[in-house]
Image 1 (cartoon, chains in turn red, purple):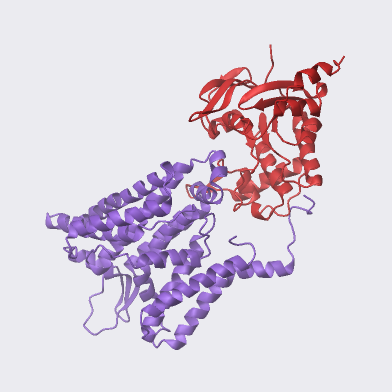
Image 2 (cartoon, rainbow over the protein chains, first blue to last red; image 1 turned 90 degrees about the vertical axis):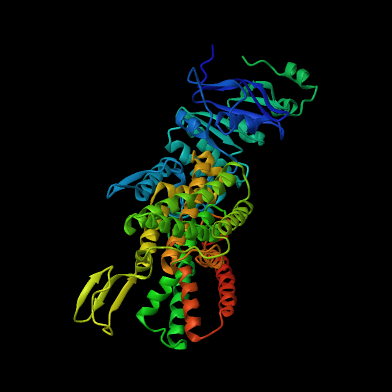
Length: 259
Length: 356
């Protein structure tokens, strides 16, 4: 009945005696942003690590485009078109922009029968994708270390776009940014939605969620405790779900049904 | 994101400082060499270069081993005693093969190949411990140091390993090219000339060996996917993992490479000194780590290049030979290497675009 681009079905992940993710089912459609919210330790990060192949699930399945996909390693997820931008961005700070966009998928050329890194081509491709997303970087030869937080975020996003992501998972994309850079990143998210990507967004910032997400799922102690359309809920109700206050039901009843 | 344009313009002052950060080591090396040309009698002679390279071969190879490991953010303390073990195993194997009637050249080739195969084992164990069992590199390789030392002593029972065929010595102390003024030149073998005739010996064979290996390593680290992954693992292991780089396999390969290079250094030692002993590389360990650090690599991984590590080795080798020729006691060298090392690290931190 659902036309999900990507969904998890009853995914379980345990660490020793702790069940970090307990039978969670969420889904995201193409051109849609799904926000996953929850307090620290609610299991949001573990859930996205399951989807991105860092922590293979102990039970349950991940479905992509109507078919179950086996994601056991980060490489599997990338091959399936699932790109993840972590809070720490997962950039190698000692390498330049081009090297980072092609990290793990380096472009090679043949020289005297040997496979050699083609840094010129990688830089040229990096310039193209940065231009497409209207991102300015002082120098493509600059190592990531020398870039600002927003520039780093932009490089991480460019990397995902370059690899033709179908689903983009973003963990706290605006957490470490100044106001102007936050806005720029949120604009980027809207652009990506318009291009038909499915976005899964993890954020503590209620403003971000209400600005760009279409739906939201709330997790508490590893369990999904609620799912709402953004246009049919309010920050108050969402906070109630996150902290598990008992008034949630009452508030929910008080919300005017949308026509 | 407000910075303008992709091409980018750096302010002049920053440019000068970053140029200095890039080049200070080479300037220092030039000054050091110049100093000894005046301070040490007989140093200002092209032959000095050959001598310091000949005696420095083990340090060059061990520094290369250390460089790859340090770029990944690790350290390999076992290389010195892997060198010793390989010098013993190589000497014994080649000697045994030659003694069993195998032609000397074949005995050398076969014995060397077997020695490298054996010598890589400690590296595989190190790599397995570090990459798969998450044992800190310091602990894993420190333990391996002890194991290799002990095994070496068990094999030789307190004496030198001996018994290499004469060909080994000819190769080990031989040169690539000989030139006798008036009598022409020859490769690898000393020309037949009357005693007392001057013969120029050009480039020791072991130096040729080291140079070829170092060139291959330069290529591997700076131009291949493997090299890029080594930097990525050292720069941000998590990022490398999430980008789909097989981090554990790369680490395993790096520690195996390290032991392989140490074994090659052990073979070079055996050929040079026609013997093997357990502590053959014990003194080279610290020099090789110092050379990598002087070359600007960060102890935390992610940086360091073959070219600058070679320069770091040269700084130490020039110092060693210069002080010897000046007649200064050896312990002066230890003090000076320590001072230069600390100075290098401070400079790298102080200048922009490096370290940190």
